[in-house]
Each structure stands twice: as structure tokens, then as C-alpha cells.
Length: 354
Image (cartoon, rainbow, N blue to C red; front, side):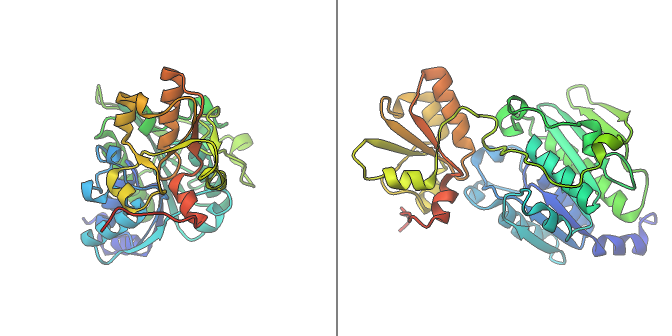
């Protein structure tokens, strides 16, 4: 394309872009930026591929269930364009690592699905002076904008304060039409390419609203608010894994280790996918799929302590909430930070693989 030419392609090749989240939004963003020839792509995600992701996270297939999203995405994207440098950040973004991480990149793309991460990403971009390409999805609707670009508004100019925990449900908990992340992620990739090459007018001070049920597209303009825009230090944003379920009881890996083999009966239920469970799990734990428990809650014992385990302590929260609200369970604990916390403490695991 003459509008981009060799000069624009060189700008893309020289660019370093960090994509936060390799999920529904991150997948199409990463695919199109890889195809466009962005020279260095950072992929930040600590999660693992789950069967429920496949409806919208189009980089992954059934063979990837249980694997690291960031590592798997990098391997697959390298097949699309082997000349890209993929930098895997298989970690949970927080206020302790965000600043140092963002300083390594030219532009940040937010592909997250929760308010704590969105506010953390925005504030870290403000402090490090990085443009932010934003995307958000909800059921059939999506939003796209560009923040902190050339002195323009930030995310806090649009949403000044982080909502409380009751409003922090993610798209995996609410539900989203599978094609919507592809649409919004493609718009994000387009905005990113415009920023790098200097083409067109990015959505700076504007937010694009997309409704796929009516296929309506509306743009709303907003201005920079100096009162909320100027962030100098990162705050405590809460933990999106747990803040949506503040009343659910948690058990740490240390606590569970002490309880195993004790006098009081304890049921340990691992709700991860069968392949992942077979790779590594806690000895004497039971493996039930989430749907098994939803359809047959009696699999979970009453009147004794029960610990539910998933990979990172996220999916298990929703299952416990269901058991408490719908069936009156009172002694079900979530393993805080999931199986990964157990492995990090080096408490050992067993495998069903031959």
C-alpha cells in the first residue's frame, strides 16, 4: 500500500508492542500485528487454556487445553511470521512489575477483561508515558479507544474511579458472543498500526461503541480531565480473581498442606480439564469437570471441609459461589491462586501419565 510504503513497514518492524492478555481480544490483536510485521511483540498472560475459552480465543485448539496461553500463542504466531521477536511474559501483571515491564515497549494494548487490570494498565501507561490501545467487550457490545496519546485523555478521564467488586465480573463469567472479540480486537490492531505508522486519525479523545445486534457504530468524544488524568504512583487495585467473590472462604497452599493427612476428613476436588489433571495433581484429589458439579452437586460432600482447585484459583470461585447460593454449602474453600500456588511451594504432585 502506497500510504504505508517501505517507510511505514520499517516503522512497524522497529516497533515494540506489549499485548496484555492473550484471550478473546489478545488473540486477534496478536494475529494481525504478527501478520503486519510488528518487529517485537510482548505477550503478557499468566493463565492457561481452558475448554471454555475456545469459543472466542481463536489462537487455541483442543490440543492446547491446559497449556500456558502466552507460551502457546508465541509458538503459533511464529508459524505465521517467523521474523517477529516474541517475548513471553508468563506472569500476572501487578503494581510491582507493571512499570518495569511497560518501559520496555513503545505502545501497550489492553486485552484484559476486568476493571483492576484496566486501571493498573492505564495508570502504568500514564507513569511511563506509553500510548494505550483499549478494548472492552460485554455480551454483544464492544468499545475501542486510544488513551494517553499525544497529551490526550486517559482511561480515568472516561472512568475516573474503579467500580466496586460487585461490578467486576469478567466476560468469562458474564458471557460474550464468540465473534465479538474478533471484531473489537481487529479494531484495536488497526488503531495500533495507525499509531505506529502515523496514518489516519486514531481514536484519541474518542470512544467507538459497537453493537453487533444492530450493527450500529457510534463515536463519542470526551476531553482530558487533569484532575483524574495525572497519576504518579500505582495504587492497590485489588485482585480480580477474588474481588468479585469477597465472601468465599480461601485456603492457602500452606493451609492445605497442613490439613492433608490430618484427623478431620477433607475432600479435595480438582475441577481442571482431564488432560491437565493427568499431567499433575495433588495426591488423593478427585477430578470432576465443572459441568459434573453443576449437574450433580451431590458429588461435593456436605458437613465436612471441601477444597476446590483450579489452575489459578479463578474458575473455582464461580463454582463455589454456585454451590453456596443454589445448594446451601457452607464448608467449601477455594485454593487461593490454585494449583500454581501449590506447585510454587514445591509441595509435590502426582501424574496419571504413563
